[in-house]
Image (cartoon, rainbow, N blue to C red):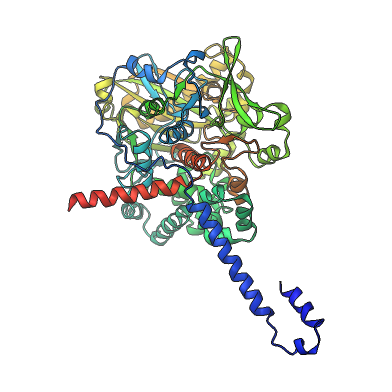
Amino acid sequence: GGARTEIGIAICGRGVASQPDLSPAIMWFAAAFGILAFIVLLYKYVCGRAGPNPFAADTREPPRPLVTNKQEKNKVLKQGFLASRVPEHLDAIVVGSGIGGLGVAVMLAKVGKKVLVLEQHDRAGGCCHTFTEKGFEFDVGIHYIGELLEHRPFRCMIDQLTNGQLQWASLDNPFDKVVLGLPGKRRVYPIYSGKKRFPEELKKFFPGEEEAIDKFLQLVKKVGKGVWFMAVLKMIHPRLAKFLVYSGLVNWLSPFFKMAPRSVTEVVNKLTSNEDLRAVFSYIFGTYGNIPKEASFSMHSLLVCHYLEGAWYPKGGASEIAYHMIPIIEEAGGAVLVRAPVQRILINDAKQAYGVSVMKGQEEINVYAPIVISNAGLFNTYQQLLPQEVQTLPAIQSQLSMVQHGEGGLSIFLGLNGTKEELGLRADNYWIFPENNLDELVENYMNAPREEAAKNVPLLFVASPSAKDPTWEERNPGKSTLTLVSFANYKWFEEWKDGKVSKRGEDYKELKESFIKSILEVVVEIFPQIKDKIEFVDAGTPVTHQYYIAAPRGEIYGCDHGLARFNPVLSVDIRPETPIKNLFLTGQDVFVCGFAGALAGALTCGSAILKRNLHLDVINMAKARQRDDHKKDQ
């Protein structure tokens, strides 16, 4: 360095000292060399392509006829675990068949890897599964998906993961309606897709707020586009990533991380003083689970951008997703087996994962593979599936200290007698709030005693899966469904966490009924046609989610998505590679929540295992498809 050069000059006599001082030139050369080395390293990690590419070839096939026979679908979705069904010479085991697990399993299968996916529930799909009660089919987690225009990378990825078999139906436009106020004073604000139509329609309802609306849209687009850098931080070497963070370069390179410490409330309150417009800017916080004052504006921007160009629902229902992914895993010699509760991940003395233990009846069956991938979530993986002595490792505890549990989910399922036309149901969603002070409403509710909270649920998402699916009437003639979603404090229901489903006692049943009654009063007031048409009603509480999807505290979005989640240090440390060699994480805890977020986690996990940037591979495939389609049109 320059310091050593100056010392050398001083001790070499006057003749040398009279030479020009070269230290600035050397320092500039060193700096330039350092920058060049940094760029080369970054390029190596971001653009490196050491392993095989699951997206090398377009594997789409003409869509086959929709399978409506439930028994036929169950042959794929409900294959029970038996030791005899476990393929030999596995390349990887995936714990959990949610979209994060199935996604990475298909990516590995597409490069010839033999993968076993293990699911503790009685059907595959995780939050993408459906269930039927009293002749009514309900989805549990797929309500609407964005970014599915033909040449978008996200659409191209899903097409490849299902070989083009998963088809989509557009929602109406407006796709969301924000309802503010109590009966008699309700204001309804439609939310339209379309980068031009979204602001144009809002301006009709908020004259004089044109500048605020334009600034909001400009900001969410700029911030949302910067999320690519989260993937970069998770794929490059941790030391390089931490250099970017601690040097401040991460904020300079990514608007997403620059805005991450700012809450939604802080940002929108500076844009406008109109309370209703503030609420409309903020309403979609229910898709990730944090009230606006505790939510990162960066996360919020992702969701606003996600639906800017439209919203879609899978034709044939949410179970079509897993139904079209599982055969690809099987074609490569793998399997997806249900009723397979993983008890523990097998770790050897060298702290390496080498398989899992599955409980079959009263017997534990060990299944071995050189790679174990967990889609069970960070908390389940580290606190339930690892041996005690491994859980206490400082690196594991460090990651756990960075996160907390998300809020518990509350779902109500309505089975209705009548078609969507007869009941006035449309392919859209309602977000219903009793007033525009969203932070205060939800905070008071979550902190209230459970009996009081049950009478005043301040956030309600209402959607009709049957109205969104154009194949519904063919499959379920004369019937319709509504799904109602909100949040609930896990502590309200915690005392029943060890009870059996449908046998948790009268007190539990009465508490559920209290929530159902108050929520139905709101829904029937907005949808009066359904009042005398309800044939089935039931609710899923946080302990329901704990049982069916193994959510530790009934959370529906995994680790909490508050401001701390988007600290860039967390993005560096919580990555697919874990402190245990050969153990990887996938799904929404690796990236962000939701269907798209969990698939981004799967892409990032696949990148780590295959040692190439699959995010970039998907983008390149989308560009190639667009070029090919453009040539065909000429």
